[in-house]
Image (cartoon, rainbow, N blue to C red):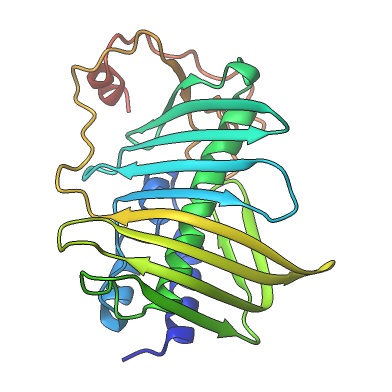
Length: 272
């Protein structure tokens, strides 16, 4: 069986290799749940492969918080709810990823019309969710603890940083780093609730991130039916390769193609 350190390296390296693929896989790969990564994890642990991840992230001494809820459908579609609180202000919104080519958004009123900020919200949700899975894998390589009282966890890494990537950004957490906290499964079919304190190294010294939330394999997975109406959603085409503009145009390709006239999610899928 792989040691915890090896599992962390497998998680991160496998994701980085896969992240060079198309945006369609982003929702699953960003959470380290799809093959080949999932297969590698299963070989060394009891498969931290959730499709429903909640994360609340704060940093001691810094105001504000970021809360995200990332849900993955069996077909690779995703729904991401994001709430940002900072200096007394609140910004919230929902993102849907459809067929890997379409991003639907609601909310984000403070950033209306700014696709870049909405993609930043998507990236933040993906990065935070990845980080939680890597830390849980390091701390509990056997997977979810048995139902019962909270299980205290601790893991320390002296030499290997954590570097995680989405299709459009990345984050690096330098070594040495440690994670401490607790993970609780109140009953067999309940989400695993976690409270983690993650301290890592950067150019300014040691920094700490507090992470709390839950991870689960949903008993009723997300479904975005073809009949779902697009009224009230902003629709944008995602670029088919990492780094492509949200409009869907490739660098140097000239004017982005016009968005299709679609009334339902099913009509969007037909234009994929």
